[in-house]
Image (tube, rainbow, N blue to C red; front, top):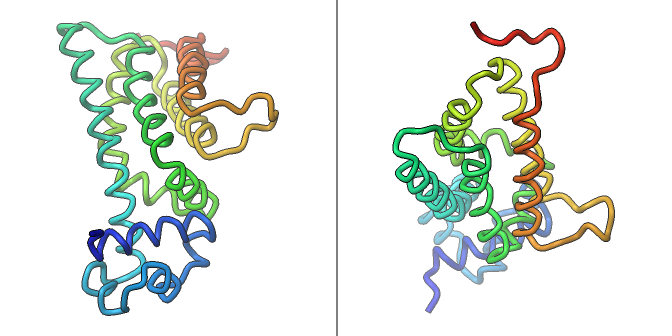
Length: 204
């Protein structure tokens, strides 16, 4: 038997993915989940808290998988910097597994991005984990100027979001999430290793 809290979260995920967060009311979620208003207020208190709990439930396993892969690679490296590919594989491939298992959540994240809610979601649910990977990338790319490095991290985040949530411009390019992420790892690895542009000075 599905717990009431789970029913509410599953209903909210479907509706947020289909209609968007702003266009979905608590009344619609209640009807979809076949529960009463008191249940929503008891378990969540507000629509904002409901979205927060939903994202946490989905993001936490992904973050744990990312960190487990990074920890395993760092343990084998015995103090040496990891390769860019190792870091990106640990960061990106768990998202493909999660997306394949739950495409509705991918659509939900696309809606969140379109509605301008992504920065707050990333700050709360993904940033602490991402900072571990940014630090690992920095060790792997010690000669890249700091400003250039940070821009490339910014580009990585944008490319990841679009690759996961966006529809490919060319229909022939539509592939499963794992294939998308493997291609993205190759693309980003080359981008991170590209020489700094003219006018960028390497640190002394």
